[in-house]
Length: 404
Image (cartoon, rainbow, N blue to C red; front, side, top):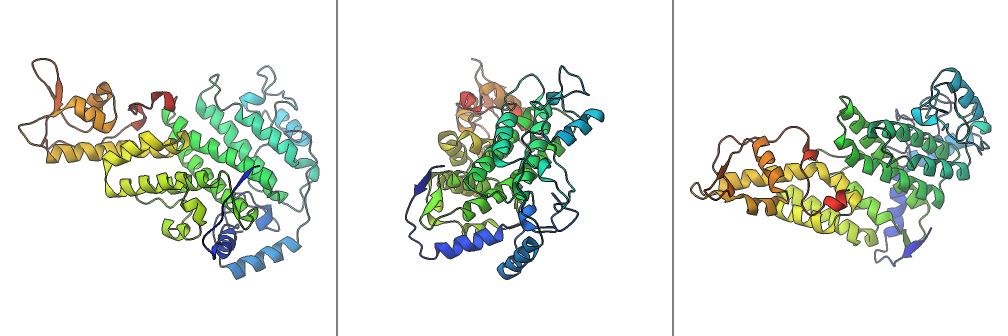
């Protein structure tokens, strides 16, 4: 993996990096990925809560000394014993079945499932996949991401579970090199893309799927930051680190959002100076500032001009919030005798006029049409309300090819 080398002007950055690496080590009491015996920070699927450095280091040493070093030997995407058992129990995903048979799979189709409760000491190495197999398995899973043969929620459920199993195998073998970074980056991108794609799903349980996807996104992202720090040399940052740090900032757009339970201001103190000064982080910080200030015009224009697709996937649910704020300001601040032209409003909110009429109706506002057919928004209406329902039904003007 290539790295970009930039000199850090901050002489204390090495200590900042050390603190940040310590902060993101795992908490043995975390519910997700729990092990039944001999819990170990190095044998965990996720890294979640921070602890003070002295406690953390001592716990790490004590736990690691009691655990064997595991090196996986399974040559398949799914261990033979698990594959046989799941055939017998008809526990095969639709993507794992031979000719659609729920009791028949193969080594080319079956992928190891995530196991929430597992004993590290009793884990046979034949059930753990080595790094090359994990890399191939991940690429195989992500090849389903753009499949149109099945609804996306079905595809997501399959990739979601099997990538958690990959993360578990990586952690149990203490694989924390640059190849692990590359794999975690791919898995974070999967969860970010899913934020966008799940919004078009109409399943009645989709809200819980959204929640679980966001939960695993933040856990995978936090582990990725830990891996960056482990592999950091004194004068370099990873080539993709600024991009993924920008994701973390954008995840705080919600009024009460603290994805990992830590305030954003404290997190910023631990970020290396070159990342703070990067283009990606500059964009994320401006978007965060415009959103919190209620500067809807600059928020929308900056998003349209500078957002990458993955950044847009995170920002997307907040766009309707910003548009509603803009409508509220125009409605309350306009002149009663001068309706606001729809063509101007369309450019301001970056929406198609047809979508804008529908959006205004969702906000309880009425349009008027003049004698030549031009529509305008009546101002000073007292019926304004925040829109409810699916925000994904309203597109983003000039970004249609980008969204596709």
